Image 1: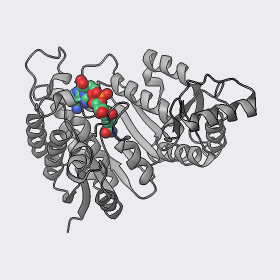
Image 2: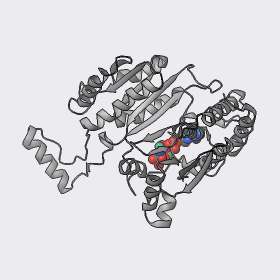
Image 3: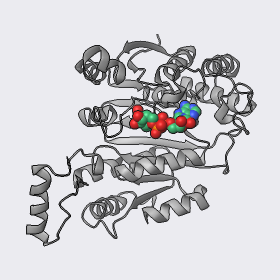
Image 4: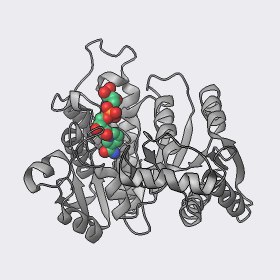
Length: 366
Ligand code: NAD
């Protein structure tokens, strides 16, 4: 009998509910069996439960160990802190895995790109240690800096602390090497700014160099983050697996998404030792919410990653093939996958799901 997978389903904000609905439909059409545990976070949870991240959601994810999540809005500068960052911290989802590969038919500058970005997900400037300008904490921090370094910091400064631990660096770089080995990848590139940030990025790099010795079958290189950006746009095909600290990982995963056709086709997963949350790279794109306009494929491809994680390889391969076929045919795709976006011939989010389901029936076993 087919396994029944209990999965926490989080529609999220903005365009989240529509891409989630489309993804749920195609996942169910693969024949894999799901029991969905609906969980509300973000704006709607704030209205309903007076918190953007209710406890029952955390309990549900911990119980099921797998979640499929739409994007959640984070207000800039005001309101609640990022629910996404909180989720990753609470569940200790220390890896953000973002495969970026070109599917034939997607309008892009490059072809044959197949990069996997492994971003550290819990430390760095995202650790949440911040002191606002003019607070007693900021003043004490300024005094501490002067006492220990004799550096005079301006009194009207605000602070966000960059923190990288050996433990954090080791587990994410180990994941990158293990992933490379398990997926027959040839090279791991570690990106950093260790020439300037000697004690944070320097530590990350030292750990990666040390671990590389245990993986003689995988080529290892280290690369300064600015050089990485330049080389990525000149010749992205030279990269395979890229591992990097949190903030650079944020930028580089969107850069790589851009190389392969944009956020509409960029899936992702947040992984811990025993919990996995699958979500697209894109955000909640509030201006498109409810318009049935955006591309659900990034979330569908996150669903493909989830199927692999659940051991449903056949269903995963079939779904990826169905999506790839819809893309290459170019008829039932959203505006971002049209060579001249905005030319009016694109279809909507739910029509993409219809087309993928139709192809699933045609492709049979991939
Ligand atoms: P965004 O990714 O939401 O949208 C930027 C632009 O990318 C959109 O205007 C649209 O043109 C395009 N886009 C995004 N998703 C698309 C899709 N599926 N199909 C086609 N085009 C798509 O980024 P933003 O505007 O910077 O962020 C909006 C909100 O989302 C913010 O509150 C941000 O904090 C949040 N966010 C959440 C997550 C998450 O939940 N993991 C990730 C990133 C941003």
